[in-house]
Length: 353
Figure 1 (cartoon, helix red, strand yellow):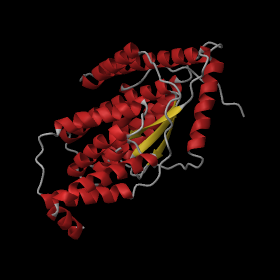
Figure 2 (cartoon, helix red, strand yellow; figure 1 turned 45 degrees about the horizontal axis):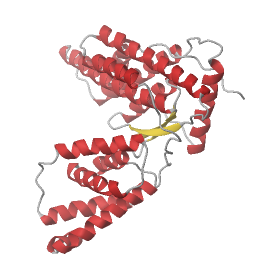
Figure 3 (spheres, one colour; figure 1 turned 60 degrees about the vertical axis):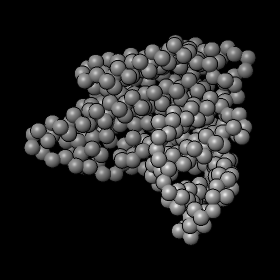
Figure 4 (cartoon, one colour; figure 1 turned 180 degrees about the vertical axis):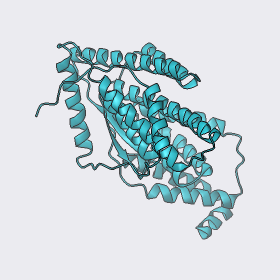
């Protein structure tokens, strides 16, 4: 590595070829099923901020030569552009340090394995932007308030709007000449306490007519569902995670004030209980009845989502939560989940045998 970096640092004429190779490695990652957010996530996990900036620059430079992609891909590129602009004043290191970081990044990119490809939607999803805006606003208020009861009411209202939005989209799709089909997205499930976070995401996905498959080594879950429901899962999971972190900080402060030291086991147990309890409440909420004419529409979409998930992941395994041993953490986490309750979801009929 040092020898290669020394050669590159000593020859400024090699910069163009180094950039060209980087574009090739990024394009190769796309062919292997990776997306911009996935690459940045793994680079941040395995390397450091310097490499993240290099990867972001490579992705942005390669984008004009890439084929047209879907709206999720475009949104990821836009987010990278915003982060790149915020890092624009970062001073470039000396040539040797820079060359070393580039080679470390390329080594990681070359070792990326193939992932399950995420298919682009067959037709553009035209959701109700105003409805999604209202949902985002409610969840933002729930995250910001210091009053648990207010956060509970705001989150419940947001979930009710999500349920209504999902049913409306299902009915519109049932009447459309060209039926929609399930898609998938990847949502980061970052350490620490990633097991509990994956359980929480699974609960939110199930409540919103989606299925989630966790990839622990690469710190993400693939969520399969219809586009409108995928957007709801991203919004609600992110908000509940923010609320859980805030509630956990409050609970830890109370424990310290009482003279009890809390450790990693307290936080692990807290988030595990939070995820478990939210899952219970979501499953209960999903039993709310809907009119008979909606059941076939919703059931057919559930079957389509399950079939698509099984095609993408023909073999999956289950895992048990580890490190859940702190009784106080579990109790406080369950209480926090009760305060973060969500509203009703339409009930789906059982899947045919």
